[in-house]
Length: 295
Image (cartoon, rainbow, N blue to C red; front, side):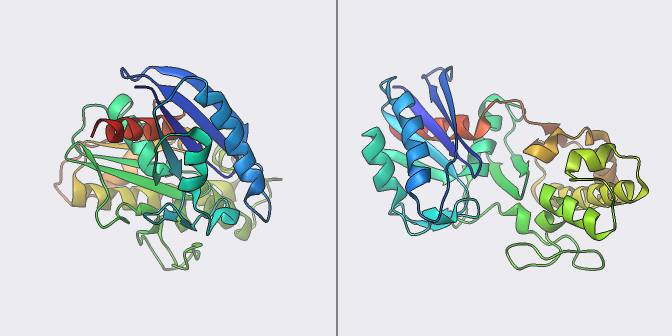
């Protein structure tokens, strides 16, 4: 059976079709139209569904930020708030005319990297998507770990609520996201008096400006501290980075920061690597749909 996967993001919607051997038969991408109501976003999803449905798919997986209830009603979505309150499952099953399953978009990323990418072969793996925010997914014992349904929210794990910390969108001060996300890197840089026009994490990283160097060094320090805690608690074989910030060439610096923050004498065997699967959110969603169709 062919399965489709969608990654519904605030900027674009990506879709893929997978066969039973995990070959990608089709890739589709459309910009996410948005507005005060859900109509424009549903129009974007509809365009993706038209393209994917031509392949004769039997099951669809959807990766999306935020939370949904068991009926498929969107309870929260930081990227597309107009979807809140909508029964998205009913809408999508009407579009695709087949069953649809939902999962957090970062969990879909983790599934794809564990099955096909940089975490392949690991029994325990952390997927960490560092972009505008910080999303994550846990693979424990070779399977996606959901806990009580809200497990793996690493972005809101407390790192340091002291001097220089910011308040996250969740209302917590000094969590992983408020130190390490692309949005927080830029905000801390601007608050520190940085002079780069229209700054973004890449410009800040490659700038020789003293303020930029100081902000990026602090980001890497806090990233290493957070990862060392994950390693101490979970002992994963791999931590796989995705998202825009993951494209920075900072992996050696991050590993050194982790090593400095580990317990004295503790061995450091965890791989810290970049993602390897194109459109990993959509591919992971399709893999989860495949699992559901076979169960």
